[in-house]
Image 1: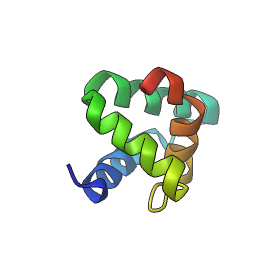
Image 2 (image 1 turned 135 degrees about the vertical axis):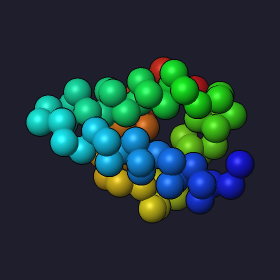
Image 3 (image 1 turned 90 degrees about the horizontal axis):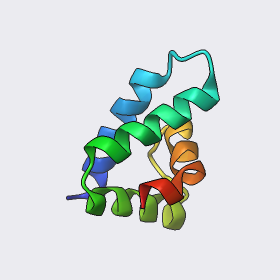
Image 4 (image 1 turned 180 degrees about the horizontal axis):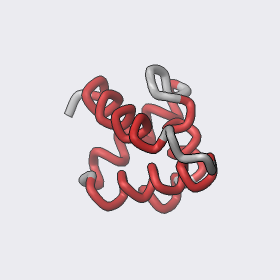
Length: 74
């Protein structure tokens, strides 16, 4: 899948969790959703994008969620 499409999808998840008043819970929930509903190759591609491109195009909270929960997503 194209990285651009993954970014759009990840940002949609981030938009949903943006209203959470607890930022840490939001990031954990973003990572959990990606872990539960995305194929492993999609998760790995998104992780690579965050690490190699500083998460360009991703909402900050999504990028932070990927960095902080990388081990559980891989």
